[in-house]
Amino acid sequence: MNVLVGWPQSFDGVNRVVEGAAFALSFDRAPRRMTWRKATYRIMYYIYILLLSNKQVYTGFTATLRKRIQQHKVGSVKSTKLRRPVKLIHYEAYLKESDARRREKYLKTTEGKRFLKQQIRDLLDDL
Picture 1: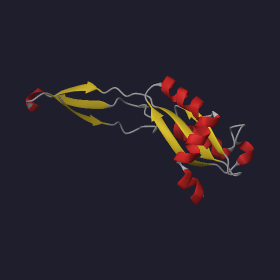
Picture 2: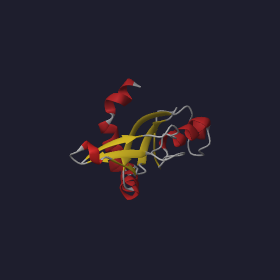
Picture 3: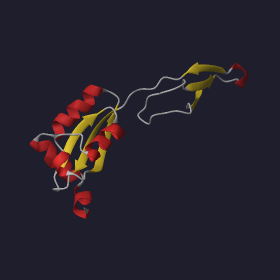
Picture 4: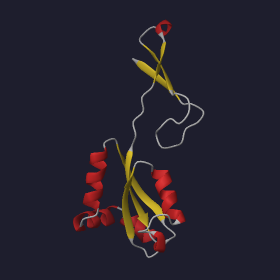
């Protein structure tokens, strides 16, 4: 089955439809049998890495990445408020919240921090 997906005019950028309904056109082999149905969308869960002004890295979790990064930038987050400006240097997206939380917990351990710094060492050297 082939599926063509279209988006409504208003979309907030965080994988959720705000106004209207997203639609999908699905058809089997014959285009004459096309049917419209609502498309389903999944919320993504993100872990993100910020580079702070003191060259330390901050690891966080969110379901609304753009909104959360903006909160860090304007100083609404207590843990990074005094270490601005912040810069997003890495993020990972997961379909399951439990997977994202497990990954965040691992990256906050000593072993996870070591792994992360090894993984993005070229980026950290350039900054």
